[in-house]
Length: 209
Image (tube, rainbow, N blue to C red; front, side):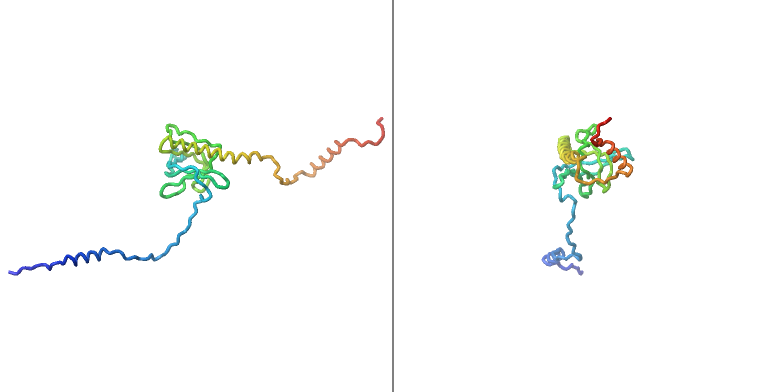
């Protein structure tokens, strides 16, 4: 009777073979080398004066309902030179802009009906690159955060109002420009005649009869 036996396996050889299979230490250089490109966000000349996580909504006139625009950090940015303040918000992960407009000193935040952590306001928004007159709403984690945003927004309104006031005070004052004379020939002739009639009579040395 013959018996068949399987060849014995050397444990050391098997371990060495497994280690060789698992060895992934080789490094492969990428085929294409991509250079780092510096991208500008348009916020380089601004400083953040307020930032808080929130959720933004826009009222759809067509659908007659509130639509979510995105969740992320709403920020108040002040330009270092002009001192103007704008509201900017980017969506989380994608960083796509969903809110972008200057703070209007004439537009106050209004309480959202039935919520103490949400505000509503009108704005000419440029989030999509073009001016859009929208009714917006923003909601925060709690009423405390909503109150902090309201305080920061009110302060930004005061800043913008102070920037606008000097321009209004200067209206109607001469700025040194020479205005074009649009008076017609007939009007000039009438003015000259009126001036002649208004002149006092010359003294001829004769007494009146």
